[in-house]
Image 1 (cartoon, protein in one colour):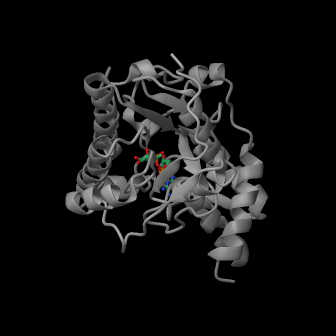
Image 2 (spheres, helix red, strand yellow):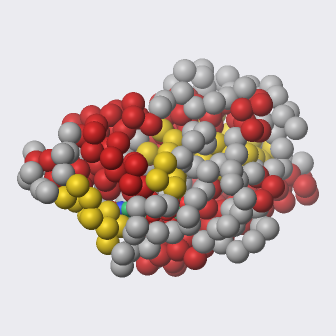
Length: 316
Ligand code: GFB
């Protein structure tokens, strides 16, 4: 199951999507791996253009590729921009994986998402629940693209013996996240809302949906560490889950964030906004059995993210 022992030392590792939260954290984590990290900005390389990716990969010859490039966003962005979440993601991952095979890339790590699993699959979600039932409608576009990426890695493994693997992280957060209220995920959105609420002494802030859905949150540096761990220690066609280990309701998350930020007001709920899937806690038995687990607890991760937000994004 594991195929342990792939060495990153001396390798040329391309982190696609290094300007994003995940890619940025992976680049930082790779700094201690004695490898050469390759990156390309969007201006240098448009990943949706097949020819550009082909030329760039032929010229730069990576040995290893981490696919952290994707169109990502929270529940509202997923629900309202289906073309980008489906089509751009299909193009980006297909261009990279296809050309990885062409130029002889030894190892590809494709990053998916816990939303690939069926909406009502048994909790915690095991890797085996993939394609056993209907998807959550708000993010089906993104999920279908990510499932296709998992399948393409499996196809190259089956037909050409390529060591291309897929990891499925739970909801991620951390420094470098998107803090735009309409397109972000819930955790950065609530950091912004509580921060502004504290500054204006607001009696309450508004949460979307009912506050009852449960989510699991993993700090991005832990994901980056898992990426390095899996590249070295995992070689299998099944995707492997990367989670934190426990989940909270959205209301409990809001209360924890309010405590970290120092917001003393209450919460109201906007029922016109979707709840999304009721729960998506990952079963991490496989990665735990290999010897990896998350190190950053939720409160500590929120505090670090809030520090970064105040230093880099907050106005006032
Ligand atoms: O993080 P989030 O946008 O996406 O929302 P998902 C999680 C939950 O938080 C939902 C609620 O129940 C939201 O209704 N929520 C409450 C809020 N207040 C807010 C707010 O101010 N902003 C946001 N964004 N949510 C995404 C998928 O699903 O998760 C993606 O759409 C991806 O495809 C990602 O899988 C990890 O967790 O529901």
